[in-house]
Length: 310
Image (tube, rainbow, N blue to C red):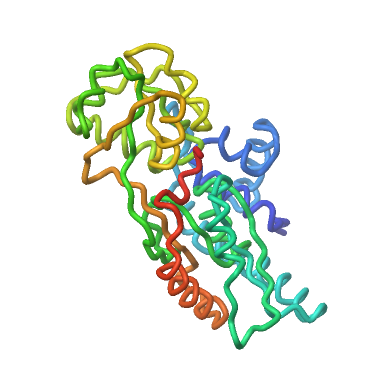
């Protein structure tokens, strides 16, 4: 008899999404050996090979895709059942859990919390901060109702609404060869070594930029991988390096004598999206989204909203 648990399904889904045992084990908070052992046990229990292991990572098999499609729905239903039961027990029927970038500007968080809905006068807003990739995972699993994420990849289970579009700013010392320009193309920027944001911050955006470099038959020279914009600015110790920052952080870097210019590239954009599950039929969520968008149009936050290297 099978003895799979909800946690087992979550392990399988985590490995499918991460494509790496290291990243998946980190996400669920267990050691890599323990993670591998449990995945192997799951495959033996159901007598199906869910993943192929190779030097370039882990790939989901066709059988794995079929299994994960249902496992994801089971996980969502399980957590939603607990959530609704708790609401019924405690009478807390007007509550939204909203995920936002760990470094979201306080003005936007204040806007999130200020939304009032006439039909939900006792509405409680719970904020869950994380990196954008993790927020999308939490959203798919039903752990949160909405999320503000940066430049999300297309995911069939997720519906998004783009709220703000911006371009990266390339930051450097005043003696840098780019200092005389007002803007630069990717081909010009790739001539110099980078202080670049860590892939764990935003895997999709990180890979998109490097793929765009490769498409132009160039290769990026990344000297430093950073997790915070302040680190990138501090590493600009000579006139060769450039750092990738958002408009807001580029303005802050200017206070420390660093110059910046606009990156001109139609494929590389900073987009802040409001995201929810495509199958979400909650009237509360729908009304909140409409009111939030209306309020945002009336009170525009700072131009850069949610790139989590801030």
